[in-house]
Image (cartoon, rainbow over all chains, first blue to last red; front, side, top):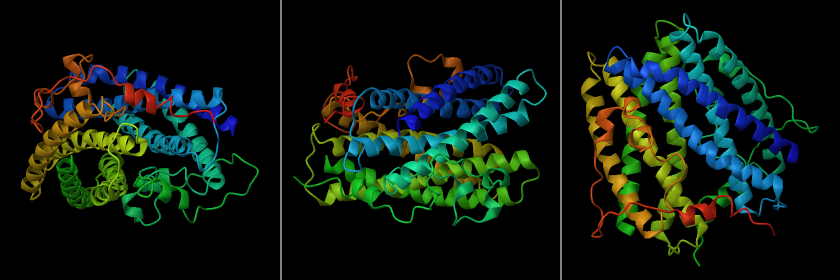
Length: 202
Length: 202
């Protein structure tokens, strides 16, 4: 499991660089917007990525702590399970970044930034496939506990009609990250215990 | 404090209705988009609000549990503090919804949905001011613990230059929600203890 956390740590550091680069690209668009609509549009994407940066800046030290200390890696350790759930939210965050980059590739396609955005897009796509594989492993290992509400994009939901999805995001498969065969998580006992049930009366 | 949780519960139920209405308005735009760029744009906003809906569907039962049971409301109860932090993330979520609605008011301004979007925008703006006041109170009461990473929008950050902000979001004040004078939170001891420090070695 340490390999997963080393890989996640590297991935989150990499996407932090991506956020900083992306914010730098968006800044002149916000500052030089031709009208209020355009200004709000670029500001809005900037703000969402800055929020993701804030979340990652809080999450990365927790992963590093986990790597450096002998933390119990069990479903009974609620702090550990919450760390897994925070990671699963950053899975959604990477998918969302991919869509921000793809949206930007439309409006920056004839600019000097197109190539850089394209590279960031491909790195993010690879990282997204990797984190999906890692979370599949962790969910198998911890009875579905590493799956927070809000971690699955519309594009991958089974109960959403295809006409609301974007095809290029739906037909990707997670890379294998373990030797065990990938099994869908049917029940989520640990997650349920950690949400409402964990607010115990004392 | 129960009054705050009753108000938050009502607010989150109200914004859930808002999300459903908004998703219904966006659906035909996704289905009938004139090109891939437009389709991705509306899909992307739809997906972000659907994710917010997933988060709220997980959060509301926790608030209801808190209202119905005698849960210890102390800084030592990590489940309670995490609940406050989850609520603070939904403060950002409401700000983000406000920007989604304001963006949509540009592209839907000559449609039958303009009035409905405008009403939703004003309701969301009011709710955002209310949740800011509630979180100010809770942060005073719990030493800044009700303040998760990613809860403060770019528009309200002190270390961000004004040219990256949207003025109409920066000059709003939180409504008072307690009899105590509003004090800035200078230190965040409880939050720190709950992040890295809470992954204790056993």
